[in-house]
Image 1 (cartoon, helix red, strand yellow):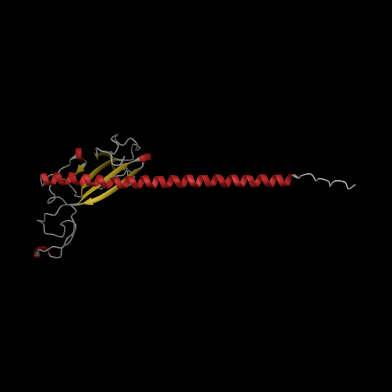
Image 2 (tube, one colour):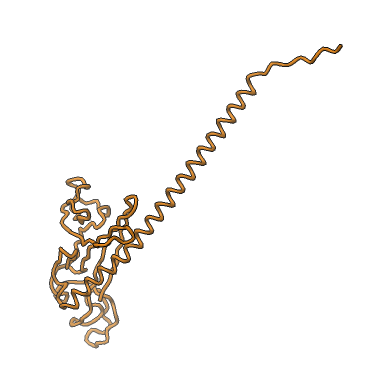
Length: 218
């Protein structure tokens, strides 16, 4: 009678290799899950950002409508500051509209949240007195505010202030060939409108914040 074959004892090396392979597979699966999760977050954040930026277009339209109404009521309707409407008749070189553009402690901030810039460290800015106008109705669930600055060095009539105008070729022989931003390429009695800078802040889902800037003239 033939004796049964002897069974060899299992050695620990094969078990160790199996455990290492299992650990490697677990790490790979975890990395894949994290990658998919991160990708979803990035895609979601980009979508929210795009939605907030798109909403700013409607805010700009409302700001333009307000400016046009003021000018239609009176040609001097935008010669002075209208802080309650988020309008300022001059531009400030030290303005930091987003709160992250200038590093100088002399910068002047916009009080976007109506809390005197509480989120900013004291001593990192000179003032927080510029007040924006609020869009009363949410735009696709986004809260929008805007502030407007006339691109002049001082308030008052645009003809007496140093303002930025659109450039067009002059048709008058008295200033033929003179094209610059101060007189819009026209003679001193030009009736061209100065430029207006509209800065919009939109805050949407997940605290997504978007800033846009639009330059217009009438």
